[in-house]
Image (cartoon, rainbow, N blue to C red; front, top):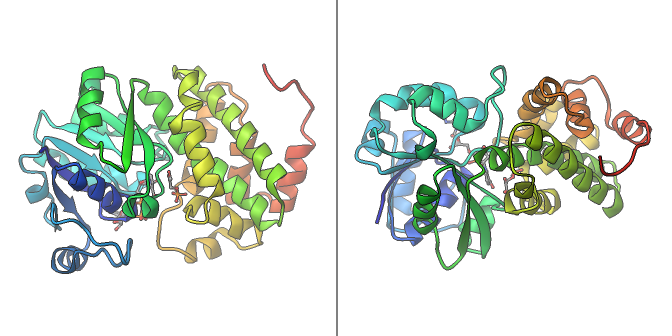
Length: 333
Ligand SMILES: NC(=O)C1=CN([C@@H]2O[C@H](COP(=O)(O)OP(=O)(O)OC[C@H]3O[C@@H](n4cnc5c(N)ncnc54)[C@H](O)[C@@H]3O)[C@@H](O)[C@H]2O)C=CC1
Ligand SMILES: O=C(CO)COP(=O)(O)O
């Protein structure tokens, strides 16, 4: 049993808490709103994010970050990527100095263009042996229903990765270790942008050929960026890359795919955002990932065009026309 703090009681923080409790850990879940924490403790339900799912007794919710973090051996971070920095700055003084810090987030910070573990390292001073990522085809509702799924636990230190693998392995959740933190994080963040592009295809009424083309070329450009940034290209062929792309791009549960669908149907970004209270990370990370691509001299046409769409510089039809009419080139280079 590992004393674990999960910081963020949204869909994924709550669903992953179920995994952790099922694996036998003592889980303390931090929620931003006291009334939601009270509801979780009193009814064993998170009605705002996972209605109808009964939460195991091993999870206790609290709005008091210091209380949640006290004595934690593992701290899981599960707020929207753009909200990590201001929150972590408040939490950092309460984090035990040897705790392992696990990011569940799939985004790249606007402005700094930092991956989430880079933000965590900068604020907490944690070294690579204390920084980890859990990422893969893990739609929160399906995980919360304990439908079987696999995932990646990435940490530069293989012993820590193995410790975390045991920490979250359950009869329904099968984690694989990886030491490629850069690739695992880039794969998760970029797939949200690619899923948004696939949603645009859905919104325009296109079928499976269009979507398969976007998924495959999306994986190609993600891999190109990853290799320039020091990632292992094989990570992108695994659960964090291809696995998550397949799940997210084909699921009606994906917020990013749905957001793209709304844009494809002709809604503005404001209108599409109004349809959900939940985070669609790709709508923000498209900008930071496009900037990373530019910095590293990597061509990422799908990310670049999604950015143009989200920033209102292009409509969905124009996006498709611009993508298809790009200069023809070999598939592999
Ligand atoms: N939902 C899913 O299926 C999965 C989500 N993720 C990633 O997990 C991260 C969190 O996503 P979800 O839990 O799904 O999002 P969500 O939208 O369901 O919940 C976000 C949580 O963060 C809180 N929050 C929002 N703004 C905040 C702020 N300014 N300060 C503090 N807390 C704030 C909300 O109250 C809520 O508890 C994202 O990076 C997402 O990409 C990763 C895998 C699966
Ligand atoms: O990352 C996810 C599944 O692995 C969830 O995707 P969405 O954020 O698009 O819902």
